Image 1: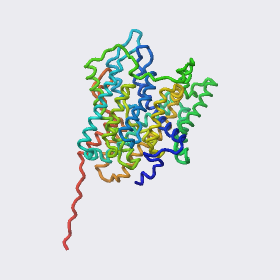
Image 2: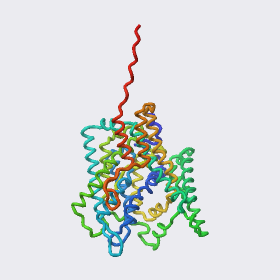
Image 3: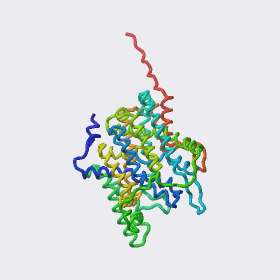
Image 4: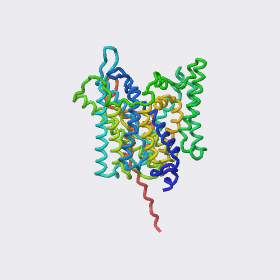
Length: 483
């Protein structure tokens, strides 16, 4: 197919130069890194382990390792035909927080402990749902799915996936809200430099430079941020101090063997507290996690349709949606045991494939190895944690925008006629509800919803509903004039 010819490296190909392959793999790791560690940073921040250590710090390494392990299993299940990268899912943050809060205990010293094993139980349920849906598709095929999710629905949903992340990109770029004291123009400058350099490298670069625009862009943004930070420390101006080097300082202070090599504190090695789990708690976990699994299945399908458009071949047919769902679901169950976080396909990495036109699964495998290694190499892990959010925010302007543009491209390629009223209504409802952030929340558990359906899933549900109730109008039969 013509779209396949446009790929510089196809799924089964590998760069001739090993150094080039390594940089391409690092690019995938950087694309998912900040978003991946955001989940444990937020979810685990209120809690400490039985030894008093912050769960947040303890579980960042295992989360990165779990992303690599989960992706490897996914690639194996899909027969190494789908160049997707799996990492932490934002969709499960609300149920994770609610589940941990439900079994949390406040200690005499004011610290809070909880039983982390509520999370592996929940993630195992998610994996089971994915496998059951995959079995259903295996028995009854995917034709019904194509009718349920035609291009006029999937295209706008893909646009929503990209545009709904716009707020996150801008928040990272600016360092705060406009008009507040945390709003930082220096951070914006560093992020925009990363964005511009990325675009220039992708558009004008040749050979290796054209293949790694995100690495080059982030390196440029980081270098400028480091220069401003050095000046800021020199003159005592905190406004200029963009880079937080404390992870590196803490890693080497004091200097010890673990400053260079250390094993991550995987969840199954951590004793959270003596809080017992009851069958009632297991039932609560089912109520929290199972509904969200159907939401992320919709996102899974959207990401694979997007990648299918980039590759020019239908991944839902080969390797098949059954295999991709099992790969994603079991990867989440594995991640639940190692770090307590769900895995999911990452739109950022889909965008990397689309922009660079490098679809090599072997590069993804190498990226998995790097992600796993990161959790054990203390200096590298510490260095990556110093990358300013503004730099990743600047690059995300391109990454998230590319996802949205892919939805537009699908509508064009499928020749969706927006002269037809039905198509306008379906797309309008999806775009406004999704970008507007319409969320369906049910129940109340200490200020947190028991069940929450994300705006992306809500927009897809409404789009499917509108597409099903609005039928194509029959064209009037023209009168036949007599001879």
